[in-house]
Length: 76
Image (cartoon, rainbow, N blue to C red):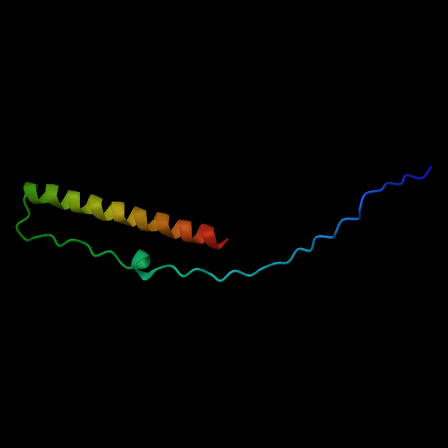
């Protein structure tokens, strides 16, 4: 038994690999973080201020890492 139809023949789809240039990671995301200086006469009040500053630096480091992960995900 033969099956025939009156539909048009469809074009073959051609797939090609395209190379995408690697996005450079900005230098400010990989720059070293400077640690705060600890004064010689360190008091408990200075400790609270230092802890707040360290948490701010930690937060900025996490923001930088998230930006790097986003850039790497876009390049893949």
